[in-house]
Length: 138
Image (tube, rainbow, N blue to C red; front, side, top):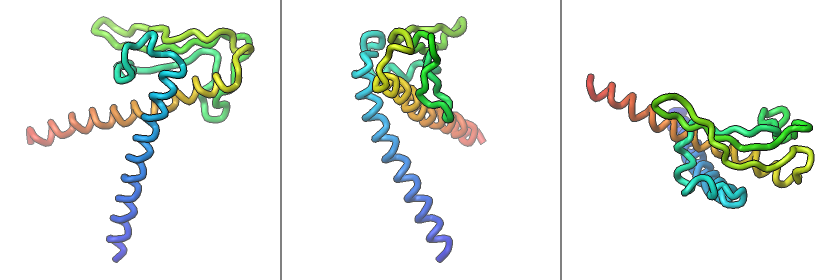
């Protein structure tokens, strides 16, 4: 009976996580449009081609999440990995951190954190496929 409870709890956690992922992707797409990132990235799906997305002028650490760094410029930068190395791409320049509205700052931070959340799933799926290749070889 205890094993059945554990299995049920595990199943509930997986269903909940997959639901959370779908909700995250919907909100991420909304933020993609609101922040006008489509001007630099031709489609929403292409945003996941980047290896990382960072921002200057806004803290993204948990203890200081979405606090501005005074007297800094806010710029969203994506890192594209290429054969010859990495390339930084300016996704959007927002202006000086001290002059931005709090709502915009929150959207910028939210977009990046939600992007990282989805990117973690994509990386997990990638490595799962690679592990399966080892298992198939024997």
